Image 1 (cartoon, rainbow, N blue to C red):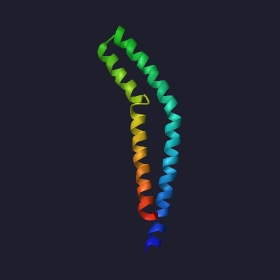
Image 2 (image 1 turned 60 degrees about the vertical axis):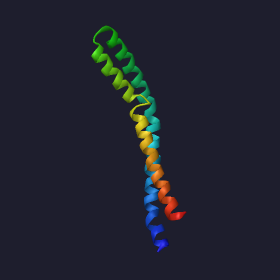
Image 3 (image 1 turned 30 degrees about the vertical axis):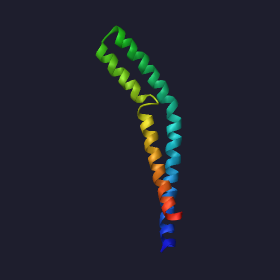
Length: 96
């Protein structure tokens, strides 16, 4: 019975490992682009805040925070960590 469970769980663990590997690569590659875009939007937000409209400047600064590496990419990294924890939990429960 345990052997059948190991055979059934092997593709799931392999698929999770491949998914985590691909997502980590995408997250790593997009970090530079998000950082650059966040910097440009933050500079634009400060300029709009000072010269044009405080409300629009604050909106741009919030958007800059969300696309900065501390915003949505950090949430994606957290979620990827939880998926990796799931993979290790399955491996530990079945194989360990």
